[in-house]
Length: 257
Image (cartoon, rainbow, N blue to C red):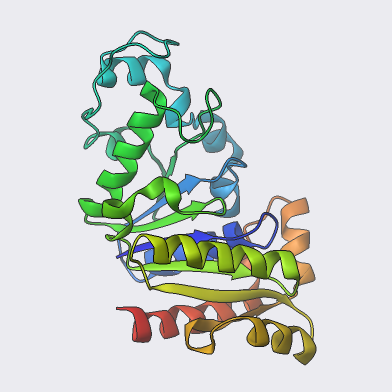
């Protein structure tokens, strides 16, 4: 099972990704949570202790690994290198595990933009493809807004794209943007989870701006979740939000798989 979670910055997608990862792990599944967001906060949201977080090095920053696998020289750009590097051993060798969830932090590539043809980008894309198409674990991907970097073949291996939205036009625009990107590569399975809901008006606003059949449910605004970030506590410990995501997870299982 492969789930890609996306949404506008600040909507709570990392909170959702962390909690649903923990829920699957609690059921005994092998779970790999992939942090593909530039903010790289997934391990923190999962409740990893600081000493483990300090040991995490994003794959894109492992210059020697990138050079070894792509047969390039560290820091080179525009030179010849291998475009199908070996990646199958990377998840097991470089992930960190806590509370039954393995975390792999992808990192970002600054030089040349998201479409650059450089060793780092080639390795990340190849690794993403492997995780989705060949890895046998449950894979939860916490992504920035957009799915175009997955590519058509890789995206087809995703069981569900979930866009986390909040009551606001910019968040809804992100959903429509992701929906269009998905449609452009032939993917129809884009679902919506609402967050930061305070009242019926908030939920009505979202329902008026999305396709009802893709709506999985909502998470209400929670001061506990906000405060958990300040005291370095996992949102998994916030009982009300946890129960809401259990309901969402069950609905996802019924309509997507």
